[in-house]
Image (tube, rainbow, N blue to C red):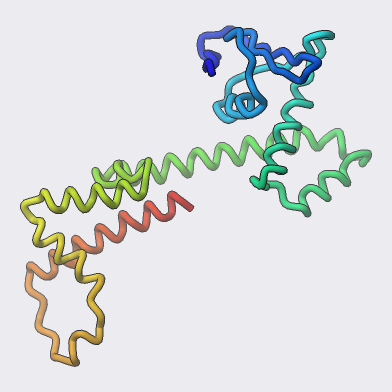
Length: 205
């Protein structure tokens, strides 16, 4: 399916909806699905949906239908209590204020979300290993292992990783020897790897 090119288009993309419920993208001259229209929305592409026969703007109806379909498909995001409160506002004296209030609240949420993501990604990007983790945590773990094996200090890194798997019972209550400089370095490397993994876990959450 052809992709929209809203970045090079003046004004919103016009989507025509026909009586048979088919959606026609006038910019790319092809029919699209409601799922594709949802993807355009997620990509922040500006579009207007009009009735092909009357020319009436039905963008609101179509976007509402997308939300209904998403909620019905098991990807529920709107809590029941929120829906009850929202429905109760219809016909209320405050109804006229709700659209601007909800829009401002969502804009504020999106702004904070982007700032948080940028802060987390900025922290990860300061570390070469963290850069590999942004797209895929599993690939990140594999990349770390490969990098450690190829490193001249591979033995040191392997020992650092293995320290996390040793049971306290394995010591047989033997007196602990004073840590050497090399052991201290290993522990520090282990802590750095743990910190990186912790940042990735938080990013996925």
